[in-house]
Length: 359
Image 1 (cartoon, rainbow, N blue to C red):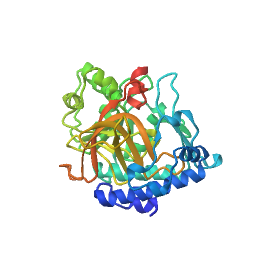
Image 2: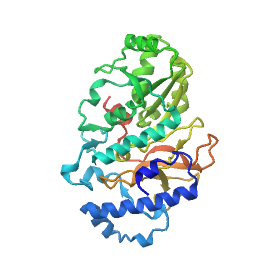
Image 3: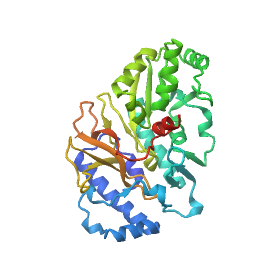
Image 4: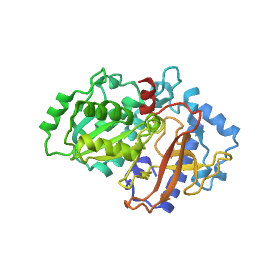
């Protein structure tokens, strides 16, 4: 089955048995592909004694620590076929991950994102308010996860406005005019969590302003560490926003530059959901065995998307817990989970948290 065939499947409509068979076969294919085309990856597979015959389930596919993309150049395409290089977010002095994309992988990232997000927003493009500044997307050939996130979600916008100037100041008059122009229409708002809090919510509160965004959906992500240190929970975040924006829909997402496109969006029940095209495994830290539902551990992310670099099975530096599978009250099939935060001593790397540390 090609990735195009996989994308034709419903993003949240494949049950556990069929999905595990789909993932196991696809991940094995990608493992062999990267072993044949990425010499450092092949050496790592040799070092761990990998044999496809030993793989009985998705959990048996070898994973790479996500930190390796900071330390090594890992690509499965010729240098001249690299169409775009993406970098992770990071604070000053941190090494950043470099992800090498050919045209096919870049196109599949966008197609995957459309399939996942459209299940929340519908297929119609909406007026889009971006809680960021325009300069962050200037370099299209090599840009950060922050710029990649904005450009990726921009495909859902029909007419776009950056709410902040390059000094990260809220352009309130421009925002008011934008809302007046699109009064009565569904509006998409996108931003990274800390920026939405610091430069949108706090600016509106300080100005004593209240915007009517009751017909809007806010999609945000990029880390909670800074807000957690301020004792701002997801519930408090949503409640505070609604005091200055009306009763807008709010959806968090979990994703990373190493698996751009395969994001995990939050449903109305407050659960992050895996799609048909990706999955998560929670592993126990002492032996990396698979944790049970309700048991906290280290999050591994798997995806059928990455072909130009070996990013199909990655052990993150995030802690989380699986809540269930195929039985979320929202009706979506697949695993649903909660992210508990960064592992102790792990570097900040989410767009929101990395920006917050610099801020």
